[in-house]
Length: 510
Image: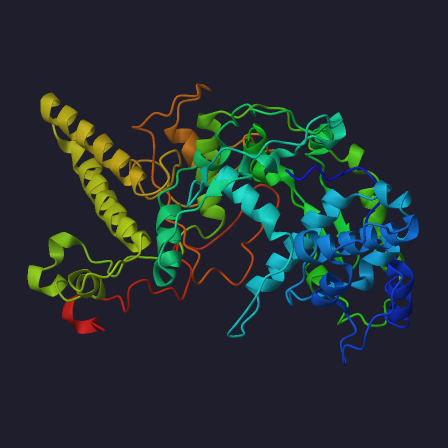
């Protein structure tokens, strides 16, 4: 998307705060003014004030200093911004001092690593005004390309510079050069977004890309042969693993399940410059990860099986048994058949809708999905006892119809134990057919063994809506050895309360 190189040396090196002002002065050709107690870098406002416009009659040395200031500003504002948003770190100077050597670093992996780390830290902040760092521009481009939620309208692009060589042609980001962004009320924006996200299907993020109407810089495809490398990404103190085998469908490959176990090292999350003040040589500190990075060409994901919808449905069935997949639940779990009309009129949901307020779609979808699932179970429970073939046929069509409707409340290509024929075995989590035991998952009992790519609506099941609020604080349990023993558990994240207190009728109203 940005045309940054992937092959190359990891972005790391010495990181010593002593003497940082002298190093910045040598790098930019200008002494840094006093900034109080700030030692993490130079103020972005200072860079803009002193290097905002290069003089027309500047000599080569002065132009070089302005170029360095521009690069440092680019790092601080676009590629590697920290959560403060007002400082350009001196940490990068080591990699930028030698202009020729700077081109041999893996800047693409460093940008991705730093973004992953900043997103991780932002999710754990509890202050009243949390912020996020990293290349959010890259994150925004990825979101616009993969998720249709609030995707802006693409407007005619500005003409590219004529006569440029292939290397200096635009990158993929040029698609979004001019856009028309839709506006929404600030107090409703978040709710609008999560409601649209809950309406997505599994296909939405992985649709094929249309051909681009302009030539790309050859840098955008130079390293496409190693996109599926399984290795650590390194950016000074930060190390984050690149695990494409966990999202194989994004690369058009079959999703193998359970995925190969890879330790992402919880200890790495505790490594930063503040907690490791005594570490001055990050290259030595992360020596083992650097060695692993240098073998990335030997660590490519070897899965070459193409994606099929039937195999993906089996993966979804396993996935829902291996992790929490619903974060927001309905305001009540009572069966509509057991609720008197007066008991269900004063719930938080009803109060909100009567007042004309917008409500979350997730709990509504969950409520409808639960009701449809209950109806399917009732039908499948009684259908084997019906002797009349015509009635049995009607019940079967009705069951399939309700099953498809339940799937529309979530992800229509997924399968789950919530909606299926009761005669199938309960409990346990299916294992990959590639595992040592060769056992089949629940989904493999429901789905035909053929590998056709048709989305059979009657086979489609429901996966619960996913919400961003109150996300789980812990990592999902990892599967070891292809099987996993577990006790029956709710598919919801503990502690979530979608529309106020849930309960039965009048006894637990808010």
